[in-house]
Length: 97
Length: 169
Image (tube, rainbow over all chains, first blue to last red; front, side, top):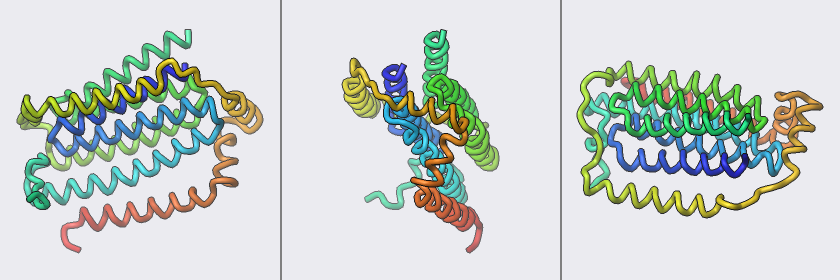
């Protein structure tokens, strides 16, 4: 079951990467980033069957970082929405040359 | 039996993940994400990580996804759909990148018979201290400094989110 879980995590991660590259809605891109974090968590839990309880501890820390990242990222999206009235990343071209 | 449950919920998790990418409405994407997270929680239970499964449902599917839902509803994004997929020619690059990445990962994982005594150690710790105690003991002894730093990180995130989302600083 460990190998299958690792393959599932690979699938979920690749779907997340694809979503970030394909979509232009900032919120959905952000959800895809959460999907990638979640895929890594699956592989950590699967490998905790091999290396011991430390795998599950890492999942704990990854979840905390994900929560902090979601709070700050959504605040950034809100403040950008105030300027452009949209969450389409086509508009976010201030650093583009 | 566990194999059947594993494959059913793995398929559900993949369907949810594809729903996130394919969803037209942000709220539909978010509900697919909740399906994906719930199915992954079942897989955690099958891998004997009961506490992590509970935290996944309560914190991830409960708190973080509700935060996303609040923002979607605050910004009123659920109504007017305009196509936001990139152009067809541009689609080649994401397909190539994710295909290459999956090939790399699958080559690493496939046929690799991973084995170790870690599973037995986890089961013994759970039998002795309980599902929460097995995680709490190393968390408060060996990993106590990262744990405290995590608290500081959350404080910084709270202050940062307030400052960023406020109208005038």
